Image (cartoon, rainbow, N blue to C red):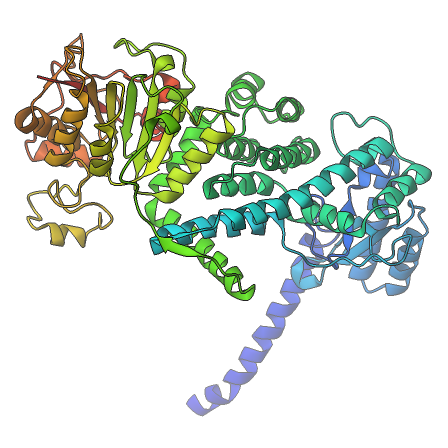
Amino acid sequence: MRPLIRRCYPMTVFILMIVHYIYSQICDAFVGSGPSSKPLLPYHRLPWRSHQELVVDADTVMEQSEIEKMNLLIERRAAARWIGDFEVADALRREIATHKFPANIEVVIQDFPRTEGGGSKWKLVCSLENSVDGSLLLEQGVSVLTLAHTALGMAVSKAESQISVNFENELISLVRAAKQQLRHWSEIQRSMERVQPAILPGPSSSMKPNASTSKAWLDSLISNKRPRQSVLDWTSVERNLAGRKAADAAFWFALAGSTDEELFTLLTEVCTKEVEKWGHRQSCRPKDLAAIGTRLAAAGVKRDNKFQVAMQTALQKRADVNIESTIEPMHLHLFDLHSDHCALMIWKFSSRQRKQRIFLRSAAKHWKHKKASHQLHFHTDINGIASDIVWGQMFEDPLRPLVIDVGCGMGISLLGLASENSTSADGVDWSVCNFLGVDLSSVAIGYATAISHRWGINRKVVFMVDDAENLLKMVESYPGPVRMVLVQFPTPYRLVPSQFGDADVFCSKGNSQLPVSPSKGFMVTEALLRRVKTVLCKTDSDASGELLLQSNCEDVAIHMKNVACTSVGFRMLDSGPILESFKGRVPQRTQNWISMNGERALGLGWRQEPVLPTKGQTETEIACRLNQIPVHRCILKVL
Protein backbone atom coordinates (compact mmCIF):
# COMPACT_ATOMS: atom_id res chain seq x y z
CA MET A 1 0.00 0.00 0.00
CA ARG A 2 2.76 2.41 0.93
CA PRO A 3 4.60 1.98 -2.42
CA LEU A 4 1.34 2.76 -4.23
CA ILE A 5 0.84 5.96 -2.22
CA ARG A 6 4.45 6.92 -2.85
CA ARG A 7 3.93 6.53 -6.63
CA CYS A 8 0.60 8.44 -6.68
CA TYR A 9 1.73 11.40 -4.55
CA PRO A 10 3.48 13.39 -7.35
CA MET A 11 0.48 12.95 -9.66
CA THR A 12 -1.88 14.19 -6.89
CA VAL A 13 0.19 17.34 -6.33
CA PHE A 14 0.24 18.05 -10.06
CA ILE A 15 -3.55 17.67 -10.34
CA LEU A 16 -4.09 20.00 -7.36
CA MET A 17 -1.88 22.65 -8.97
CA ILE A 18 -3.93 22.50 -12.18
CA VAL A 19 -7.21 22.78 -10.26
CA HIS A 20 -5.89 25.79 -8.31
CA TYR A 21 -4.81 27.54 -11.53
CA ILE A 22 -8.20 26.99 -13.21
CA TYR A 23 -10.02 28.20 -10.08
CA SER A 24 -7.92 31.38 -9.89
CA GLN A 25 -8.57 32.14 -13.57
CA ILE A 26 -12.32 31.74 -13.09
CA CYS A 27 -12.25 34.05 -10.06
CA ASP A 28 -10.23 36.66 -11.96
CA ALA A 29 -12.70 36.53 -14.84
CA PHE A 30 -15.55 37.51 -12.52
CA VAL A 31 -13.75 39.74 -10.04
CA GLY A 32 -10.85 41.35 -11.84
CA SER A 33 -12.22 41.89 -15.34
CA GLY A 34 -12.50 45.32 -16.90
CA PRO A 35 -10.32 48.35 -16.49
CA SER A 36 -8.57 49.11 -13.23
CA SER A 37 -10.67 51.16 -10.86
CA LYS A 38 -7.66 52.88 -9.31
CA PRO A 39 -7.76 56.65 -9.89
CA LEU A 40 -5.18 58.34 -12.03
CA LEU A 41 -2.34 59.85 -10.05
CA PRO A 42 -2.01 63.64 -10.10
CA TYR A 43 -0.37 65.46 -12.96
CA HIS A 44 3.40 64.99 -13.51
CA ARG A 45 3.61 62.04 -11.10
CA LEU A 46 3.02 59.22 -13.59
CA PRO A 47 6.27 57.35 -14.36
CA TRP A 48 4.96 55.41 -17.35
CA ARG A 49 7.14 56.97 -20.02
CA SER A 50 10.23 59.08 -20.32
CA HIS A 51 10.86 62.28 -18.41
CA GLN A 52 10.63 64.16 -21.71
CA GLU A 53 6.84 64.29 -21.44
CA LEU A 54 4.52 66.48 -19.44
CA VAL A 55 1.26 64.91 -18.29
CA VAL A 56 -1.79 67.09 -18.98
CA ASP A 57 -5.07 66.84 -17.07
CA ALA A 58 -7.72 65.52 -19.47
CA ASP A 59 -10.41 67.92 -18.30
CA THR A 60 -8.28 70.87 -19.42
CA VAL A 61 -8.28 69.86 -23.11
CA MET A 62 -11.41 67.67 -23.44
CA GLU A 63 -15.10 68.14 -22.81
CA GLN A 64 -16.76 65.88 -20.26
CA SER A 65 -18.63 64.00 -22.99
CA GLU A 66 -15.34 63.33 -24.78
CA ILE A 67 -13.77 62.01 -21.57
CA GLU A 68 -16.74 59.68 -21.03
CA LYS A 69 -16.47 58.41 -24.60
CA MET A 70 -12.73 57.81 -24.13
CA ASN A 71 -13.40 55.87 -20.91
CA LEU A 72 -15.97 53.72 -22.74
CA LEU A 73 -13.54 52.92 -25.57
CA ILE A 74 -10.83 52.00 -23.06
CA GLU A 75 -13.24 49.69 -21.20
CA ARG A 76 -14.33 47.98 -24.44
CA ARG A 77 -10.70 47.53 -25.46
CA ALA A 78 -9.80 46.04 -22.05
CA ALA A 79 -12.72 43.60 -22.31
CA ALA A 80 -11.62 42.54 -25.80
CA ARG A 81 -8.08 41.92 -24.61
CA TRP A 82 -9.37 39.89 -21.68
CA ILE A 83 -11.19 37.40 -23.89
CA GLY A 84 -8.29 37.30 -26.37
CA ASP A 85 -9.98 39.22 -29.22
CA PHE A 86 -6.91 41.27 -30.09
CA GLU A 87 -8.20 42.27 -33.53
CA VAL A 88 -11.07 44.19 -31.91
CA ALA A 89 -8.65 45.59 -29.31
CA ASP A 90 -6.35 46.89 -32.06
CA ALA A 91 -9.29 48.39 -33.96
CA LEU A 92 -10.43 50.22 -30.83
CA ARG A 93 -6.88 51.47 -30.27
CA ARG A 94 -6.83 52.92 -33.80
CA GLU A 95 -10.20 54.55 -33.15
CA ILE A 96 -8.84 56.11 -29.97
CA ALA A 97 -5.82 57.43 -31.87
CA THR A 98 -8.07 59.23 -34.38
CA HIS A 99 -9.31 61.61 -31.68
CA LYS A 100 -8.08 65.11 -32.44
CA PHE A 101 -5.96 66.68 -29.72
CA PRO A 102 -4.01 69.97 -29.70
CA ALA A 103 -0.56 69.93 -31.25
CA ASN A 104 2.08 67.85 -29.41
CA ILE A 105 -0.57 66.25 -27.16
CA GLU A 106 -1.28 62.54 -27.54
CA VAL A 107 -3.09 59.82 -25.64
CA VAL A 108 -1.01 57.12 -23.97
CA ILE A 109 -2.59 53.79 -22.95
CA GLN A 110 -1.17 51.51 -20.28
CA ASP A 111 -2.37 47.90 -20.25
CA PHE A 112 -2.13 45.77 -17.10
CA PRO A 113 -1.47 42.00 -17.19
CA ARG A 114 -3.89 39.48 -15.73
CA THR A 115 -1.63 39.03 -12.69
CA GLU A 116 -2.32 42.68 -11.80
CA GLY A 117 -6.06 42.48 -12.36
CA GLY A 118 -6.17 43.35 -16.05
CA GLY A 119 -7.74 46.51 -17.40
CA SER A 120 -6.18 49.65 -18.84
CA LYS A 121 -5.51 53.28 -18.00
CA TRP A 122 -5.02 56.26 -20.23
CA LYS A 123 -3.51 59.70 -19.95
CA LEU A 124 -2.69 62.70 -22.09
CA VAL A 125 0.91 63.82 -22.46
CA CYS A 126 2.57 66.81 -24.03
CA SER A 127 5.70 65.60 -25.78
CA LEU A 128 8.61 67.99 -25.37
CA GLU A 129 11.20 66.00 -27.29
CA ASN A 130 9.13 66.36 -30.51
CA SER A 131 8.66 70.09 -30.01
CA VAL A 132 7.85 72.63 -32.67
CA ASP A 133 11.48 73.55 -33.22
CA GLY A 134 12.64 69.94 -33.04
CA SER A 135 15.70 70.79 -30.96
CA LEU A 136 14.60 70.70 -27.33
CA LEU A 137 16.12 67.87 -25.32
CA LEU A 138 15.57 67.84 -21.59
CA GLU A 139 18.62 67.40 -19.43
CA GLN A 140 18.71 66.04 -15.92
CA GLY A 141 19.83 68.94 -13.72
CA VAL A 142 19.99 69.54 -10.01
CA SER A 143 16.49 70.15 -8.68
CA VAL A 144 15.52 72.86 -6.20
CA LEU A 145 14.69 70.16 -3.65
CA THR A 146 18.18 68.68 -4.03
CA LEU A 147 19.74 72.13 -3.64
CA ALA A 148 17.75 72.67 -0.43
CA HIS A 149 18.78 69.28 0.95
CA THR A 150 22.40 70.02 0.08
CA ALA A 151 22.24 73.40 1.84
CA LEU A 152 20.87 71.77 4.98
CA GLY A 153 23.52 69.07 4.83
CA MET A 154 26.20 71.72 4.56
CA ALA A 155 24.96 73.40 7.75
CA VAL A 156 24.78 70.07 9.60
CA SER A 157 28.26 69.09 8.43
CA LYS A 158 29.62 72.33 9.82
CA ALA A 159 27.92 71.73 13.16
CA GLU A 160 29.10 68.13 13.51
CA SER A 161 32.71 68.78 12.51
CA GLN A 162 33.10 71.63 15.02
CA ILE A 163 34.88 73.53 12.25
CA SER A 164 33.61 76.82 10.96
CA VAL A 165 33.42 76.21 7.24
CA ASN A 166 33.16 79.46 5.34
CA PHE A 167 30.03 78.16 3.67
CA GLU A 168 28.10 81.41 3.33
CA ASN A 169 29.36 81.93 -0.21
CA GLU A 170 28.46 78.35 -1.07
CA LEU A 171 25.02 78.76 0.50
CA ILE A 172 24.53 81.89 -1.57
CA SER A 173 25.48 79.96 -4.72
CA LEU A 174 22.99 77.19 -3.89
CA VAL A 175 20.26 79.77 -3.28
CA ARG A 176 21.17 81.55 -6.51
CA ALA A 177 20.86 78.29 -8.48
CA ALA A 178 17.49 77.58 -6.89
CA LYS A 179 16.24 81.10 -7.57
CA GLN A 180 17.25 80.84 -11.23
CA GLN A 181 15.03 77.80 -11.71
CA LEU A 182 12.19 79.35 -9.74
CA ARG A 183 12.41 82.67 -11.60
CA HIS A 184 12.28 80.91 -14.96
CA TRP A 185 9.37 78.81 -13.74
CA SER A 186 7.52 81.92 -12.56
CA GLU A 187 8.10 83.80 -15.83
CA ILE A 188 6.89 80.92 -18.00
CA GLN A 189 4.00 80.15 -15.66
CA ARG A 190 2.71 83.70 -15.84
CA SER A 191 3.10 83.91 -19.62
CA MET A 192 1.27 80.60 -19.98
CA GLU A 193 -1.54 81.89 -17.78
CA ARG A 194 -1.89 84.91 -20.04
CA VAL A 195 -1.94 82.83 -23.23
CA GLN A 196 -4.01 79.92 -21.95
CA PRO A 197 -5.52 80.40 -18.49
CA ALA A 198 -7.80 77.38 -18.80
CA ILE A 199 -5.07 74.83 -19.37
CA LEU A 200 -3.56 75.62 -16.00
CA PRO A 201 -5.67 74.49 -13.03
CA GLY A 202 -6.96 77.12 -10.68
CA PRO A 203 -10.06 78.86 -9.44
CA SER A 204 -9.82 81.48 -12.19
CA SER A 205 -10.00 78.92 -15.00
CA SER A 206 -13.39 79.22 -16.66
CA MET A 207 -13.07 78.68 -20.41
CA LYS A 208 -12.23 75.46 -22.21
CA PRO A 209 -9.21 75.50 -24.53
CA ASN A 210 -9.35 74.74 -28.19
CA ALA A 211 -6.69 73.52 -30.59
CA SER A 212 -5.49 77.01 -31.53
CA THR A 213 -5.14 78.25 -27.97
CA SER A 214 -3.48 75.00 -26.87
CA LYS A 215 -0.96 75.35 -29.68
CA ALA A 216 -0.34 78.94 -28.62
CA TRP A 217 0.28 77.68 -25.10
CA LEU A 218 2.78 75.08 -26.33
CA ASP A 219 4.44 77.56 -28.65
CA SER A 220 4.87 79.98 -25.74
CA LEU A 221 6.60 77.19 -23.81
CA ILE A 222 8.83 75.73 -26.52
CA SER A 223 9.37 78.53 -29.05
CA ASN A 224 12.85 79.54 -30.16
CA LYS A 225 12.25 82.99 -28.68
CA ARG A 226 12.34 81.57 -25.18
CA PRO A 227 15.76 80.58 -23.80
CA ARG A 228 16.21 76.85 -23.76
CA GLN A 229 17.46 76.88 -20.17
CA SER A 230 14.28 78.61 -19.04
CA VAL A 231 12.17 75.75 -20.39
CA LEU A 232 14.45 73.20 -18.72
CA ASP A 233 14.16 75.02 -15.39
CA TRP A 234 10.38 75.29 -15.70
CA THR A 235 10.11 71.57 -16.40
CA SER A 236 12.41 70.74 -13.49
CA VAL A 237 10.28 72.72 -11.05
CA GLU A 238 7.06 71.18 -12.40
CA ARG A 239 8.46 67.68 -12.04
CA ASN A 240 10.39 67.93 -8.78
CA LEU A 241 8.31 70.30 -6.63
CA ALA A 242 4.99 68.48 -6.78
CA GLY A 243 2.63 68.38 -3.82
CA ARG A 244 4.27 69.64 -0.65
CA LYS A 245 7.86 69.39 -1.95
CA ALA A 246 8.16 73.15 -2.50
CA ALA A 247 7.18 73.65 1.15
CA ASP A 248 9.76 71.03 2.18
CA ALA A 249 12.41 72.92 0.20
CA ALA A 250 11.45 76.17 1.94
CA PHE A 251 11.76 74.55 5.38
CA TRP A 252 15.14 73.02 4.53
CA PHE A 253 16.51 76.30 3.20
CA ALA A 254 15.30 77.98 6.41
CA LEU A 255 17.04 75.34 8.54
CA ALA A 256 20.19 75.95 6.50
CA GLY A 257 20.05 79.62 7.49
CA SER A 258 19.07 81.27 4.22
CA THR A 259 18.01 84.91 4.52
CA ASP A 260 16.96 85.40 0.89
CA GLU A 261 13.33 86.53 1.03
CA GLU A 262 12.87 86.26 -2.76
CA LEU A 263 13.64 82.53 -2.56
CA PHE A 264 10.83 81.94 -0.07
CA THR A 265 8.43 84.14 -2.05
CA LEU A 266 9.03 82.06 -5.19
CA LEU A 267 8.62 78.78 -3.30
CA THR A 268 5.35 80.08 -1.85
CA GLU A 269 4.21 80.84 -5.41
CA VAL A 270 4.87 77.20 -6.38
CA CYS A 271 2.92 76.01 -3.32
CA THR A 272 0.01 78.27 -4.29
CA LYS A 273 -0.11 76.74 -7.75
CA GLU A 274 -0.04 73.22 -6.31
CA VAL A 275 -2.92 73.98 -3.93
CA GLU A 276 -4.94 75.51 -6.77
CA LYS A 277 -4.30 72.49 -8.95
CA TRP A 278 -5.06 69.53 -6.70
CA GLY A 279 -6.20 70.91 -3.34
CA HIS A 280 -9.89 70.41 -4.16
CA ARG A 281 -9.49 66.78 -5.29
CA GLN A 282 -10.50 63.85 -3.14
CA SER A 283 -7.00 62.37 -3.52
CA CYS A 284 -5.68 65.38 -1.60
CA ARG A 285 -6.47 65.03 2.09
CA PRO A 286 -7.01 68.05 4.34
CA LYS A 287 -3.89 67.09 6.26
CA ASP A 288 -1.92 67.28 3.00
CA LEU A 289 -2.99 70.90 2.65
CA ALA A 290 -2.12 71.48 6.30
CA ALA A 291 1.35 70.02 5.70
CA ILE A 292 2.04 72.62 3.02
CA GLY A 293 0.86 75.49 5.19
CA THR A 294 2.72 74.39 8.32
CA ARG A 295 6.02 73.90 6.48
CA LEU A 296 5.80 77.31 4.85
CA ALA A 297 5.03 78.85 8.22
CA ALA A 298 7.90 76.91 9.82
CA ALA A 299 10.14 78.36 7.12
CA GLY A 300 9.30 81.81 8.46
CA VAL A 301 7.05 82.79 5.56
CA LYS A 302 4.56 85.45 6.62
CA ARG A 303 0.95 85.21 5.48
CA ASP A 304 0.59 85.37 1.70
CA ASN A 305 -2.77 86.55 0.36
CA LYS A 306 -2.72 84.42 -2.81
CA PHE A 307 -1.83 81.30 -0.85
CA GLN A 308 -4.57 82.02 1.68
CA VAL A 309 -7.15 82.45 -1.08
CA ALA A 310 -6.02 79.23 -2.78
CA MET A 311 -6.22 77.33 0.51
CA GLN A 312 -9.67 78.67 1.35
CA THR A 313 -11.00 77.96 -2.16
CA ALA A 314 -9.63 74.40 -2.11
CA LEU A 315 -11.26 73.68 1.25
CA GLN A 316 -14.60 75.18 0.26
CA LYS A 317 -14.77 72.95 -2.82
CA ARG A 318 -14.32 69.79 -0.78
CA ALA A 319 -17.39 67.85 0.31
CA ASP A 320 -15.46 65.85 2.94
CA VAL A 321 -14.44 68.86 5.02
CA ASN A 322 -16.40 70.46 7.83
CA ILE A 323 -16.25 74.09 6.74
CA GLU A 324 -16.74 75.63 10.18
CA SER A 325 -14.24 73.39 11.99
CA THR A 326 -11.55 73.22 9.31
CA ILE A 327 -11.39 76.35 7.19
CA GLU A 328 -11.26 78.70 10.16
CA PRO A 329 -8.17 77.19 11.81
CA MET A 330 -6.43 76.21 8.58
CA HIS A 331 -7.17 79.35 6.59
CA LEU A 332 -6.72 82.00 9.26
CA HIS A 333 -4.42 80.48 11.87
CA LEU A 334 -2.39 77.82 10.08
CA PHE A 335 -0.08 80.15 8.16
CA ASP A 336 1.74 81.45 11.24
CA LEU A 337 4.99 80.33 12.85
CA HIS A 338 3.36 80.57 16.29
CA SER A 339 0.13 78.78 15.40
CA ASP A 340 -0.71 75.49 17.08
CA HIS A 341 -0.33 73.52 13.84
CA CYS A 342 3.11 74.90 13.07
CA ALA A 343 4.38 74.73 16.65
CA LEU A 344 3.32 71.08 16.89
CA MET A 345 5.12 70.28 13.64
CA ILE A 346 8.34 71.97 14.84
CA TRP A 347 8.06 70.21 18.21
CA LYS A 348 7.78 66.82 16.53
CA PHE A 349 10.75 67.62 14.31
CA SER A 350 12.98 68.79 17.16
CA SER A 351 11.89 66.39 19.92
CA ARG A 352 12.21 63.13 18.02
CA GLN A 353 15.94 63.11 18.46
CA ARG A 354 16.73 59.82 16.78
CA LYS A 355 14.69 60.43 13.63
CA GLN A 356 15.86 64.03 13.43
CA ARG A 357 19.48 62.95 13.76
CA ILE A 358 19.08 60.36 11.01
CA PHE A 359 17.48 62.92 8.70
CA LEU A 360 20.09 65.61 9.37
CA ARG A 361 22.95 63.16 8.99
CA SER A 362 21.55 61.99 5.67
CA ALA A 363 21.53 65.62 4.56
CA ALA A 364 25.13 65.98 5.74
CA LYS A 365 26.18 62.87 3.80
CA HIS A 366 24.44 64.26 0.75
CA TRP A 367 26.37 67.50 1.12
CA LYS A 368 29.72 65.71 1.56
CA HIS A 369 29.02 63.61 -1.53
CA LYS A 370 28.23 66.73 -3.55
CA LYS A 371 31.33 68.41 -2.23
CA ALA A 372 33.53 65.44 -3.18
CA SER A 373 31.95 64.94 -6.60
CA HIS A 374 32.33 68.61 -7.51
CA GLN A 375 35.78 68.96 -5.87
CA LEU A 376 34.68 71.96 -3.85
CA HIS A 377 37.29 73.68 -1.70
CA PHE A 378 36.70 75.90 1.32
CA HIS A 379 38.77 77.97 3.69
CA THR A 380 38.30 76.69 7.23
CA ASP A 381 39.20 77.94 10.67
CA ILE A 382 38.61 76.77 14.20
CA ASN A 383 35.20 77.70 15.55
CA GLY A 384 36.16 80.31 18.13
CA ILE A 385 33.89 82.27 20.43
CA ALA A 386 34.28 86.02 20.63
CA SER A 387 35.64 87.11 23.99
CA ASP A 388 34.20 90.62 23.74
CA ILE A 389 30.78 91.72 22.53
CA VAL A 390 30.06 95.18 21.14
CA TRP A 391 26.49 95.55 22.34
CA GLY A 392 25.91 98.71 20.30
CA GLN A 393 26.51 96.74 17.10
CA MET A 394 24.24 93.89 18.14
CA PHE A 395 21.24 95.89 19.37
CA GLU A 396 19.73 99.09 18.08
CA ASP A 397 19.35 100.35 21.65
CA PRO A 398 21.56 98.46 24.14
CA LEU A 399 20.04 100.34 27.07
CA ARG A 400 16.74 98.50 26.77
CA PRO A 401 15.89 95.77 29.29
CA LEU A 402 17.28 92.41 28.17
CA VAL A 403 15.43 89.07 28.12
CA ILE A 404 17.69 86.00 27.89
CA ASP A 405 16.55 82.53 26.80
CA VAL A 406 19.04 79.92 28.02
CA GLY A 407 18.88 76.88 25.73
CA CYS A 408 16.60 78.64 23.26
CA GLY A 409 16.61 75.84 20.68
CA MET A 410 15.11 77.06 17.41
CA GLY A 411 14.23 80.42 18.96
CA ILE A 412 10.47 80.17 18.54
CA SER A 413 9.78 81.79 21.91
CA LEU A 414 12.07 84.80 21.44
CA LEU A 415 10.97 85.37 17.84
CA GLY A 416 7.41 85.62 19.12
CA LEU A 417 8.27 87.84 22.07
CA ALA A 418 10.29 90.17 19.85
CA SER A 419 7.20 90.57 17.65
CA GLU A 420 4.89 91.04 20.63
CA ASN A 421 3.54 94.45 21.63
CA SER A 422 1.63 93.43 24.76
CA THR A 423 2.49 93.41 28.46
CA SER A 424 2.48 90.19 30.47
CA ALA A 425 0.54 89.65 33.67
CA ASP A 426 3.80 90.11 35.58
CA GLY A 427 4.27 93.59 34.17
CA VAL A 428 6.88 92.88 31.48
CA ASP A 429 6.45 95.20 28.49
CA TRP A 430 7.87 93.04 25.70
CA SER A 431 7.78 95.87 23.14
CA VAL A 432 10.58 97.78 24.92
CA CYS A 433 12.91 94.81 25.50
CA ASN A 434 15.89 93.35 23.70
CA PHE A 435 16.16 89.56 23.42
CA LEU A 436 19.18 87.26 23.49
CA GLY A 437 19.05 83.50 22.86
CA VAL A 438 21.86 81.01 23.40
CA ASP A 439 22.12 77.36 22.40
CA LEU A 440 24.82 74.86 21.47
CA SER A 441 23.09 73.82 18.23
CA SER A 442 24.46 75.88 15.36
CA VAL A 443 21.71 74.59 13.05
CA ALA A 444 18.96 75.79 15.41
CA ILE A 445 20.69 79.14 15.96
CA GLY A 446 21.25 79.59 12.22
CA TYR A 447 17.56 78.95 11.62
CA ALA A 448 16.46 81.48 14.26
CA THR A 449 18.98 84.10 13.15
CA ALA A 450 17.95 83.84 9.50
CA ILE A 451 14.26 84.31 10.34
CA SER A 452 15.03 87.33 12.53
CA HIS A 453 16.87 88.92 9.58
CA ARG A 454 14.02 88.19 7.18
CA TRP A 455 11.49 89.61 9.61
CA GLY A 456 13.55 92.75 10.15
CA ILE A 457 13.93 92.28 13.93
CA ASN A 458 17.61 91.26 13.97
CA ARG A 459 18.59 94.47 15.83
CA LYS A 460 16.14 93.56 18.58
CA VAL A 461 16.64 89.80 18.95
CA VAL A 462 20.05 88.11 18.67
CA PHE A 463 20.94 84.41 18.78
CA MET A 464 24.37 83.01 19.62
CA VAL A 465 26.04 79.59 19.59
CA ASP A 466 27.80 79.37 22.93
CA ASP A 467 27.95 77.72 26.31
CA ALA A 468 25.28 79.23 28.56
CA GLU A 469 27.63 80.03 31.45
CA ASN A 470 30.13 81.69 29.12
CA LEU A 471 27.43 83.85 27.54
CA LEU A 472 26.02 84.91 30.92
CA LYS A 473 29.51 85.97 31.93
CA MET A 474 29.67 88.24 28.87
CA VAL A 475 26.19 89.61 29.62
CA GLU A 476 27.64 91.20 32.76
CA SER A 477 28.93 93.98 30.45
CA TYR A 478 25.50 94.66 28.94
CA PRO A 479 24.72 98.39 29.42
CA GLY A 480 21.04 97.96 30.29
CA PRO A 481 19.26 95.88 32.95
CA VAL A 482 18.44 92.18 32.57
CA ARG A 483 14.66 91.97 32.93
CA MET A 484 14.15 88.20 32.78
CA VAL A 485 16.04 84.96 32.22
CA LEU A 486 14.09 82.06 30.72
CA VAL A 487 14.98 78.42 31.36
CA GLN A 488 12.33 76.52 29.44
CA PHE A 489 12.02 72.76 29.08
CA PRO A 490 15.69 71.76 29.37
CA THR A 491 16.46 68.23 28.22
CA PRO A 492 15.61 66.19 31.34
CA TYR A 493 18.04 63.86 33.03
CA ARG A 494 17.25 60.18 33.50
CA LEU A 495 14.82 59.48 36.29
CA VAL A 496 16.02 56.21 37.81
CA PRO A 497 13.23 54.35 39.66
CA SER A 498 14.20 52.55 42.84
CA GLN A 499 13.82 49.10 41.26
CA PHE A 500 16.72 49.83 38.89
CA GLY A 501 19.06 51.50 41.34
CA ASP A 502 21.87 52.00 38.84
CA ALA A 503 21.57 54.60 36.07
CA ASP A 504 23.58 52.43 33.69
CA VAL A 505 21.14 49.56 34.16
CA PHE A 506 18.21 51.88 33.57
CA CYS A 507 19.96 53.25 30.48
CA SER A 508 19.82 49.80 28.91
CA LYS A 509 16.02 49.95 29.25
CA GLY A 510 15.84 53.22 27.27
CA ASN A 511 16.46 56.93 27.85
CA SER A 512 20.02 56.58 26.51
CA GLN A 513 19.79 60.00 24.87
CA LEU A 514 19.18 61.84 28.17
CA PRO A 515 21.77 63.27 30.58
CA VAL A 516 22.82 60.70 33.17
CA SER A 517 21.83 62.65 36.29
CA PRO A 518 21.18 66.18 37.60
CA SER A 519 24.90 66.54 38.31
CA LYS A 520 26.17 64.93 35.10
CA GLY A 521 25.21 66.38 31.74
CA PHE A 522 22.14 68.35 32.85
CA MET A 523 22.18 71.97 31.65
CA VAL A 524 20.80 73.66 34.77
CA THR A 525 23.56 73.46 37.36
CA GLU A 526 24.23 75.44 40.51
CA ALA A 527 27.05 77.27 38.69
CA LEU A 528 24.67 78.30 35.90
CA LEU A 529 22.08 79.58 38.36
CA ARG A 530 24.74 81.62 40.16
CA ARG A 531 25.58 83.27 36.82
CA VAL A 532 21.88 83.98 36.34
CA LYS A 533 21.72 85.57 39.79
CA THR A 534 24.73 87.76 38.99
CA VAL A 535 23.29 89.19 35.76
CA LEU A 536 19.87 89.77 37.32
CA CYS A 537 21.42 91.83 40.15
CA LYS A 538 24.08 93.69 38.17
CA THR A 539 22.19 97.02 38.13
CA ASP A 540 21.98 97.29 41.95
CA SER A 541 18.28 98.03 41.68
CA ASP A 542 15.53 96.91 43.99
CA ALA A 543 13.51 95.99 40.90
CA SER A 544 15.94 93.26 39.87
CA GLY A 545 14.99 90.83 37.14
CA GLU A 546 13.20 87.51 37.39
CA LEU A 547 13.95 83.89 36.52
CA LEU A 548 11.27 81.78 34.81
CA LEU A 549 11.60 78.01 35.18
CA GLN A 550 9.41 75.70 33.09
CA SER A 551 9.41 71.94 32.53
CA ASN A 552 6.95 69.23 31.61
CA CYS A 553 8.80 66.87 33.98
CA GLU A 554 7.69 67.49 37.55
CA ASP A 555 10.88 66.14 39.13
CA VAL A 556 13.02 68.38 36.90
CA ALA A 557 11.02 71.48 37.84
CA ILE A 558 11.31 70.57 41.54
CA HIS A 559 15.08 70.04 41.21
CA MET A 560 15.69 73.38 39.45
CA LYS A 561 13.58 75.28 41.98
CA ASN A 562 15.23 73.62 44.97
CA VAL A 563 18.77 74.32 43.75
CA ALA A 564 17.89 77.94 42.98
CA CYS A 565 16.14 78.59 46.29
CA THR A 566 18.25 76.45 48.62
CA SER A 567 21.77 76.85 47.26
CA VAL A 568 21.82 80.04 45.17
CA GLY A 569 19.57 82.57 46.91
CA PHE A 570 16.31 82.83 44.97
CA ARG A 571 12.76 82.90 46.29
CA MET A 572 9.49 81.93 44.64
CA LEU A 573 7.03 84.68 43.79
CA ASP A 574 3.43 84.19 44.83
CA SER A 575 1.27 83.01 41.95
CA GLY A 576 -2.09 84.09 43.30
CA PRO A 577 -4.41 81.09 43.70
CA ILE A 578 -2.74 78.10 45.30
CA LEU A 579 -2.25 75.22 42.85
CA GLU A 580 -3.77 72.13 44.46
CA SER A 581 -4.04 69.72 41.52
CA PHE A 582 -3.20 69.31 37.85
CA LYS A 583 -5.45 69.15 34.84
CA GLY A 584 -4.78 66.66 32.08
CA ARG A 585 -3.18 63.26 31.96
CA VAL A 586 -0.28 62.16 34.15
CA PRO A 587 2.82 61.13 32.15
CA GLN A 588 4.60 57.89 33.00
CA ARG A 589 7.64 59.76 34.31
CA THR A 590 5.46 61.69 36.78
CA GLN A 591 3.79 58.44 37.87
CA ASN A 592 7.25 57.01 38.56
CA TRP A 593 8.17 60.16 40.49
CA ILE A 594 5.02 59.91 42.61
CA SER A 595 5.69 56.22 43.32
CA MET A 596 9.13 57.24 44.59
CA ASN A 597 7.41 59.64 47.05
CA GLY A 598 8.93 62.61 45.27
CA GLU A 599 8.10 66.20 46.17
CA ARG A 600 5.12 67.59 44.24
CA ALA A 601 5.05 70.87 42.29
CA LEU A 602 1.94 72.02 44.13
CA GLY A 603 1.12 74.84 46.49
CA LEU A 604 2.02 78.50 46.69
CA GLY A 605 4.30 79.73 43.92
CA TRP A 606 3.58 77.05 41.31
CA ARG A 607 1.59 78.26 38.31
CA GLN A 608 -0.78 76.34 36.10
CA GLU A 609 -1.55 79.16 33.66
CA PRO A 610 1.08 80.24 31.09
CA VAL A 611 3.37 83.10 32.07
CA LEU A 612 4.36 84.13 28.55
CA PRO A 613 1.88 85.40 25.94
CA THR A 614 0.65 82.87 23.38
CA LYS A 615 2.94 84.24 20.70
CA GLY A 616 5.94 83.85 23.00
CA GLN A 617 5.35 80.26 24.07
CA THR A 618 7.77 77.57 22.96
CA GLU A 619 6.76 74.76 20.65
CA THR A 620 7.09 72.38 23.63
CA GLU A 621 4.69 74.39 25.77
CA ILE A 622 2.13 74.48 22.96
CA ALA A 623 2.53 70.72 22.39
CA CYS A 624 1.95 70.09 26.10
CA ARG A 625 -1.23 72.14 26.01
CA LEU A 626 -2.54 70.30 22.95
CA ASN A 627 -1.62 66.89 24.42
CA GLN A 628 -3.03 67.85 27.86
CA ILE A 629 0.30 67.35 29.62
CA PRO A 630 0.84 69.52 32.73
CA VAL A 631 3.58 72.15 32.64
CA HIS A 632 5.28 72.94 35.94
CA ARG A 633 6.35 76.58 36.10
CA CYS A 634 7.39 79.16 38.64
CA ILE A 635 8.94 82.63 38.73
CA LEU A 636 11.89 83.25 41.04
CA LYS A 637 13.41 86.46 42.26
CA VAL A 638 16.72 87.13 43.99
CA LEU A 639 16.45 87.46 47.77
